[in-house]
Image (cartoon, rainbow, N blue to C red; front, side, top):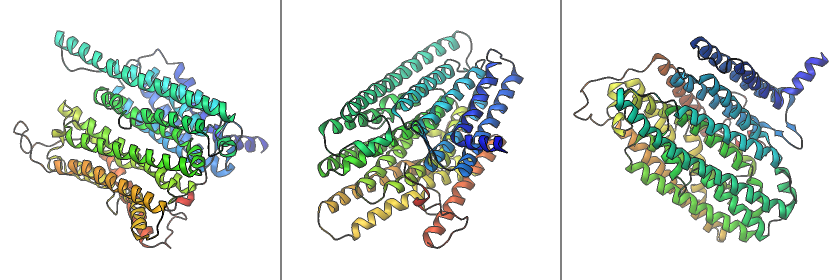
Length: 531
């Protein structure tokens, strides 16, 4: 009985890591094998371990509650982020197996992949600066090792000298874009380290908890360190005007690498960014510093939204459109910070908004991305023309794509509406307030930015919805249909049901504040505690 109790006490947060490390140790025995049955065995094994880690993560928190020491903290917010990362890991593993199961380095890819997952989870629960930097560095090394291996083993359907020439040209182009992306990430690490060095030298803090306890709201050195760290994260997340390396990499990279970029690289960056919320909260107590933060963030969101929107409307590449839509989703995190600074939402409620943005990626963006990838693979080209007449060629996928787009836009009755509702509430609140003072001016500023953001985001997505109904080109056979694999229908169907179910439940909760169907209200931000 005591042994069982000791084991259960160990589950949060370390039970998850046991499952993932077990996958690495078993895979090491087959690292040089290229047999087909071994690749299938490793895939099934790792899939089962990831699913097991997902449930152990939740179960460990349920029976033990929050875990905290000088190095790590695992509360409900960290558990939620861990659940999302494990979910993304399951999706990426499936994509790698489908697209690269014939790759001779498949087992090695899985080993590096599991190491990247472990590093990202350590970062999520890190409280000390040392564990934060080490886990972030290990994750980035693993990420670039993965993308390098995946892009070095691309399959080409050409033959003879043409195949070799095309391969060399494409490989050179990919390597160039990967190098730019790597240099951008390297600069990010240097800037973050430099910013932390200033912060440590001024305050002598060693973990994120001490940021709330030992830092004063004034001080030019603290403001300077925040500016450096902010620029670093703008580069990491590809926020305008630092989006060029990200867009180029997304445009040229192999398909499975693209999902690693969206589902691992950026969510881990968001998890790292959220660690610095205490600095913003402290500086916001100083009226002058708070005003600087407000106006800088406003300018970044405005420029990024307009730039990404115009580029998304002009380009004919589906990959680039997907990349710009993703960038707009990431801008939502900075809008949440603006709402926090202006006092519309509290620190606790910020967690709900940030988790909701992850839900947009996990359930609304992914179905559209899957459809993009499959159609690109069928037609052999990356063009928005691939979407034309999709609603007539395959009604199920066409309707599923529309549901995904409408959810991204935030149409009532869909999952995306739950987040847009809070933006609309903020705008209505500002319009209804008739008081004077600086707070009103700030409210009008943020409201205008949110309106522009929603308009741009809607325009880019509506363009895709309209293209579905446009006639085919003359080169395309009239009446031709697109046949998707059966498993594709199952996966997309699950996504659609989640979007509709969550959207309807959220709409019912909005219309009837007293409704409580499952013992918890999904629209209630209070379900999350402080970071």
